[in-house]
Image 1 (cartoon, chains in turn blue, cyan):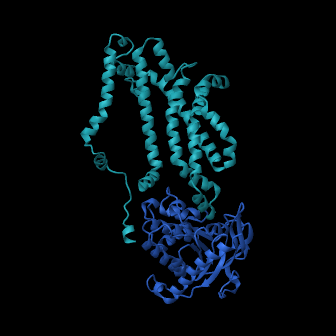
Image 2: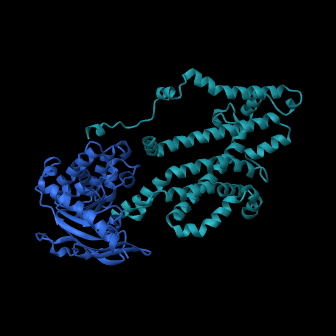
Image 3: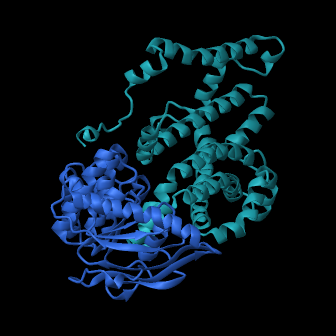
Length: 269
Length: 288
């Protein structure tokens, strides 16, 4: 089941490949062996129980941490530092944004090497894409949580990433805002065609967003299964979630997570 | 979303709002604020009238006249400032500010290095604790030996004495900038120089300012102490010389000038802090 090469996604070459990635902290094995392909120009969602090493994996993927064993390659090149073309949205927007900078400055700050005219254009476009073009003069703390996370998404988009990595991006906002931001992500991804990797513990969210789901087991985690989600686009919070296919996949992911919990419990040395 | 979009930038509460919050009307508040100064003046005046201490304590009015006579003049060419302002006040304040400035440079500079590199912090922590624990006025003699006479031993003593709160607060502030902010900086490949100037320093600035504020009060204290010995000018020297000459109105005049100096410096500092840390007040108001 860990063999993801049998996944039927063959239209595109994988943007990101995890090859037997494992991570040990001291004697504590956090990630056992993760092998997975993240297809280009699609939304992939990694879903797993809390504490399954999702954040560890993301740090390794983004080059902030090194795997104990195995390797990550992005566009065919092994990741050793933060790869060019990767942008990240963190769960904790209040810490990832800079409260001493106004919204436009926050979005522009990573673009310090870009010429001024182009930088301004990209900032304006990114803020337009997330629906904040008339909020550029505000400070993040003058905004609601959902809007702050939009700023963080705009900051990621302004760097024109090939791969957008999102670490539980909507875990700190209310349900209504969360639904809005999910739809925002679906729209932006289809407009720009970028590769997106979202990590979440929310099963509904994973099925709703994903073209491709990677289900992780409890730690030390492995890939329990990869699922291609064939729900039609554009998706809609009401009709998509009522689709029998959605309900079926959600049930399948849920049973995988529950089942894997029991199984790895028995597996433990 | 429409509800959450109705945002209201939190501005400073207006005077009217503040009045309502503490439940006092303006006249009552002003009255209460004046009460203690008036009582102090009355007690001071009573002491100056008493038979025993009256000899050493001039009346408030007499002391104010001495301030005028010593520190002010009627000469527009001298900006209406008196002899003592030029020979004592200005050199004192210049030394205090020079010492404070030096302490800010060293304290923030070293603090950032120690805050960013845990190994450096561990290496120098004992030294920092030792330096902080020394009662610096005890070292006045050492500084005179090291730097001779004149301004430099005094400036260095002030800098050495007041650098510690700045240093400690900078280390603390830099360490509190947080992992997520550094990770965000790393993911967006922000150059180290910009990380320092645009993330680490602003992130640490609320704590740095708190340290500088403590250091500023201390710098006035050490300024006076450093001028009590081997000096031929300065407010500290003037305190000693007026006492020696039994010029008690002059002595009290220096005390009044020192009090005003402390209040004015604090006021200027608060204005600067208000401007630089406006975002921080916004964040804390949000979290209340």
